[in-house]
Image (tube, rainbow, N blue to C red; front, side, top):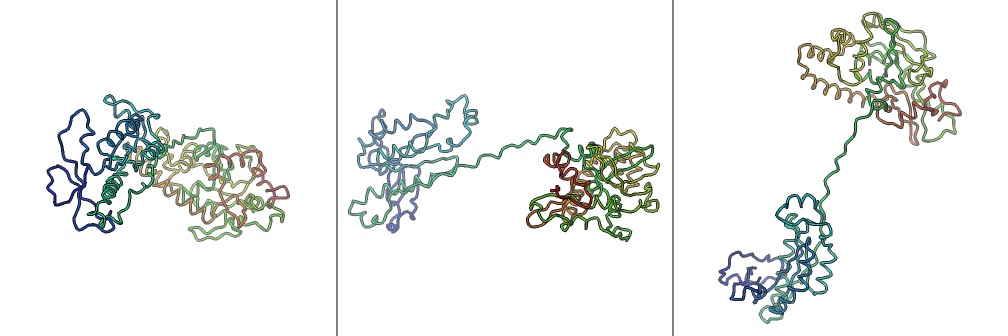
Length: 468
């Protein structure tokens, strides 16, 4: 390549205008970077075609070690023989292959090209060592990544102009021209994000609402149905999935419900029992809610016959836990004969999971109980199944999960129905055991194992000296 004046006739094809910002004080005439003119020369020696060139850009492949060896042993001696005063710029091409997936590249190149081995990729130190030995500037480029191309052309022009600075005509114009600059390091592209596959929890692991429904660890609600059947459940899951249960459990907690009735002795107030903790308690500790102890001290059961159809009474009882086989206080809800055990369990399973099995034999009974509990989305799902339009239930299930997630966030923010309190350095955090059990194996081990926290609810009025 050679640098010529812009006014000179150019018979060659392809011209590049020189960036005038390279020169501090650019000359009044322009300059172009153009291919060297052809000249008669033997075809067996391409180096002879470089005569009268202003700069030579000597390229090699960063994925071919032999090309770098030929730069030092073949091309550099030839260029210095025919163009002893011409500046040379060493350029390593295909920089993107240094950080690319070679297996994918080789698959794309087959069968036309030789596969590239990881040992063929040249580190940047090799190119810098050869350039330092030859006394030439060194740059790396990648057309795929669009890196280093402008650096090569800009610094090749600088090298050509610097080589002319000794001439009297160019001395005044090129006095402040910079020498070829160092190249900024290449920032490798970010690797693709890893594919994270989360396997479905096994049924026996106790993770998720479904497994928690079939194995009701830390259940705080027990339903008594016709024929002596008992169904254990969790207050927070039912209250956040069904407005009828929310109003019912707010009666038990002393809150204000839609009917306008207020009950004394709020259940959520019992969560803040910091004055009961011993002075020497650990800063980062856990204690259970005092609401379970209030259940033992509560008066007789409440009549619910006038509150809603299907309900008889509700009150505190000491019941044997179906999982741990330890007696603990729960809220007992008695239902009348209208509620059948099988359909009622199907409704509760829907409130836990948001799904209803299509092979359910007594769908009409499920719809009846759903209407009693005012679970209208479940009633619509049953109607769609009976009309053979089950595909419409997908949107109902999606809306159910969104609505329950918002209600759970509200309960977490306000501490409603919380049954455990985490005491930390700067205060206390109310939480819900069922939500912790459904999302963390450590909580399953702590509340369902032999730790003191699993049986702390049996202590009267909070933790004693051995409590945590």
